[in-house]
Image: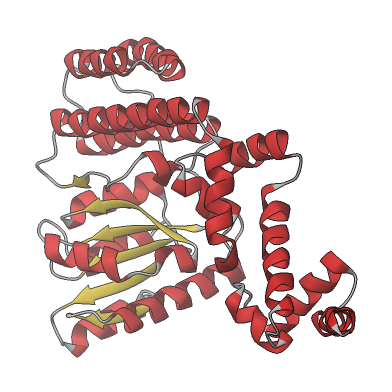
Length: 361
């Protein structure tokens, strides 16, 4: 399981730059929340309990130093990277006293950011005791919770049925019954409760969240309202349910012969099951099962057979065995030789000698 990251900065451009520069997938990280001021950021951190926080120092309502001081009163585990345009040693000294991982100056450079993210990951790996639980204190005690829970149950049933229209109507009913309007901390809790339910539905359906739900989450600020939250949630539900329906229709009409043709055309590139599944807008698990049912062999085995057949053809034309691995999408000669011998029982050189012996008069 990877680590979760929250970004807090009052400049939309800076948040966008951080999102674009971070090597999130490579480092096993995921940006799970954003805020545009210190107070909203602190509420977000308390709700999500992220592993890493990227925060500006100068922000409205609450600065980065004050935010980290508040976090450190209850949490020594979360790693913090501070970002600022202020080259002031006093800030650096204050930040380092609170066990901040590093202090980066704007404009942030990708190499510097990712080096510090890697440092955070290394620190977390040494101390990890499992993911922190989300803080839902006060959420279940909200005055409107009694009305919310039946609507939430309805929403769950509508997700299962794939009924985007009914889900949108239920979200509108939630907006209408939430009186008095939730405080900001409860808005954050409500958002992640609803989005979490959607993400669990996507995973249960056998898909990766990123395959059916594109775009970022809401950026919380002091001006964020219940209407803002539910509008964003409504859009996410509509997008995810629409994409799921499309994937299901495509699965039903999957033409395995087209998959075979695609594999034949790209086998020499070392095409994988995952790459092919993305090409046909289906999950790797579904493609694997459907292909084996149709072809009688696994997809990877089928592609390897194509590559080995092509290797044999190239040997017949006089190609040097040591040059074949690059032409067939293997990372190095040793891996190619190993795969070839596993498939044919002899090395490429031995096969070529046999071919040459047979072809001599």
